[in-house]
Length: 421
Ligand SMILES: Cc1cc2nc3c(=O)[nH]c(=O)nc-3n(C[C@H](O)[C@H](O)[C@H](O)COP(=O)(O)OP(=O)(O)OC[C@H]3O[C@@H](n4cnc5c(N)ncnc54)[C@H](O)[C@@H]3O)c2cc1C
Image (cartoon, rainbow, N blue to C red; front, side, top):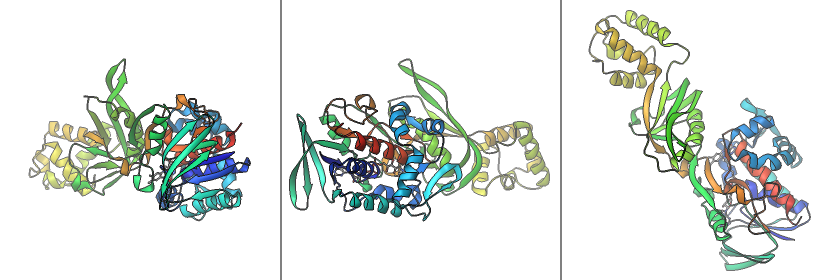
């Protein structure tokens, strides 16, 4: 069969390789001048290509529609992906949290492995070729493209839409796949950035670059409930975070954003707050004693200079300001009530969330082609036979750790394997 794959990203290349192995004549149409522009920037240039975890961990890490992946993931799991890449000549290693990387630490080697495999299997890749529209007339599909040579039409027996989501548009993913899907009558669930920094109402420019280790981050806010919203704890975890110019980022915050993305896609009047426990290892009482000890050691100092042993200086200054205690007052004049306020602040430094940072900073898109309209066993559209979807274009997203690329590999292989069956 004549198979056309739209997009030479992770999902598209994997689908093309698999379809070619099944004996199809495969062409990949890619609007960029090269393949895998997004793969190149993954894992800070090292490409965390999958996660060597058990099945439960994988499905727990997929935030939207994990059940849709049961079939495709069991057919092509993280271990199958590792084997497939090793067979393509890419040596891999497992790091902290079961994250899998190429031994070379170079994402470009992952792209090379996929490109070499496509070449070996006789896949044609047309770069600088943007698909502008697709028509389906019975069994035959026609793809309309624009390239330097002008406009062209390609006749296809099967089409794989692997155009990615909306994050990091400069890599080529700018939502074309959603348009194609809608033209075929598919619904697309609302798209919001995920695995992304949070912007805060309170300005944090003076803390920019400050990294906090071993803190607990809690997020409280509205969750959809009985046609409305109810305010509850949305996220809580212990780890590392970072202040940015307009808010917060880092591992804890990216994971929290995955819980917030669907909420921010809805118009909700309730506010969302982050609460940082700066000393989670100490109970309130233990922290109070620690503060008292610090006060005793700094008995002749101004309150404004008394927290530098406890906190990084920029954060100490913010806590002093927020405490409402006169920074010029001597430590021994701080009242028990004021100290109580201070300790509460250290256990619960609160900021109001203004929103999610934009798609251009987001690792992944939450939302996409409605998976209810796609066969999970084949990735074929339930509305238009011969049209398949793979990768981030689908309403699937997961936490960081290699899970999102694994979704691209599993759905890509599934589409490629099932064409023409
Ligand atoms: C900064 C960053 C770091 C990340 N790190 C990791 C990581 O370490 N591990 C992990 O698992 N995930 C990571 N991700 C997520 C992961 O990269 C994506 O989930 C994955 O690349 C999605 O693959 P895809 O093939 O579906 O889409 P993409 O990789 O976006 O590929 C889509 C392709 O389609 C092409 N295209 C789009 N429209 C058209 C059109 N009309 N015509 C022709 N071509 C078109 C695009 O140019 C692009 O090449 C990261 C993402 C980002 C942004």
